[in-house]
Length: 261
Length: 261
Image 1 (cartoon, chains in turn cyan, yellow):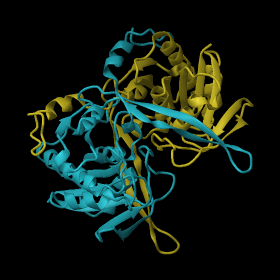
Image 2 (cartoon, chains in turn brown, red):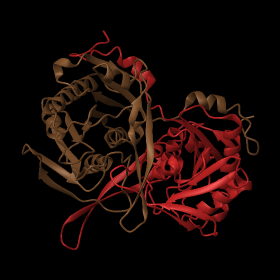
Image 3 (tube, chains in turn yellow, orange):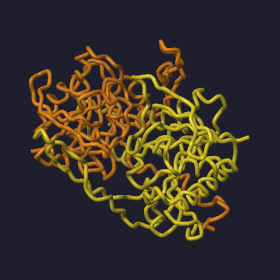
């Protein structure tokens, strides 16, 4: 039977976690292994300078969970390396309470858990909900349902090595979703600002603040799809080589040391 | 005059940092802004849930540095958003004491600093030395010299939007380097193992252990180039879309909700 590892980057108390685990129990055996606390925008982490702890607990619905002191990617590595005593076929990471669109992918703890799965030879799927709405249980149900659809497709069709799926689901009840679009990574323009404040002792401290990023509405991108009410599914690869640029760069004259000429 | 921001992920005490900053002073005005401590394998971080501190200090050679409590990518964001009162043209991150090859790119703090530069509209270059050798000052000189070569080329030729350079330099004196190769991201096979230990109170704790990753020797990859004594320069893109897979996936039957048919 398919063994599905569920993890997330919002930690063990995230409301979307038990809903996702429950939806996936129809697709296989489900094990849940998650970080103790929130790792949002925490990037792809491999904890090597300190040891990790892991312990058994219960989710809000009473189902079992293994909690770790590591990052989402650490949870996946620990589980696959043997903390969970059963080979993992597929890792599903989510439901993240917020979108992972455009350049968000480079920061996203949710996505890095799926990256870690792929690096360790399992399939990987990241699932995010497009509006942070902690109370929107209905929308988590929608996201969990489409995660199950994706799991079925991935098990049936297989993804190539080094490729994971990044799924973003509009925060809508299921009947309002217009369908699934396979998309490319779009562009969101970050509008970050430096916010300087003075602490009670007269010393400055800094926030990376500003308004939320604005998406560029190009057709067939992740951002476009969710803005139109579609579920966006983007295949993401771990080969980051810019092949077009590579070709051009071989014609550059690098001066000293150039060995392409 | 070109304004170069130097950062790293090994923190303010890294021996390669003053050597890199000094080598780049021939190419433009240099500002150094780095994390207080080591962030290796820390991933792409945007610190949003807590404020950051920043303060002035001196590097080991007496030159000025701004130190922050954030990650490498936070240093870049803070500097570009206004902590450094001068527009940044190019960010050079390094010299990392260890390689960033293959899937390392998805974890590397050194590389994420260059990603953050590109996301914020500056050019980005990551520089790593291929053997950890804290005392090998000569090899840091080599890495710093090729960083300067890359800065000159990038300023002269410009990189396309969303593309950075990932440079790996063999740990050799300059005269032993065979030249520069423009490469693609290779594959390293991680050989991680779960190491379980018992603490003095009888409770288990876990290390992600095992031998270092082994590279696959495919020609024109980053790993191949440095193993042959070349400086490897890989153009890296922030569009992670797997375009080949995307095309194939549009033919999949997703069952419920499929709107590609």
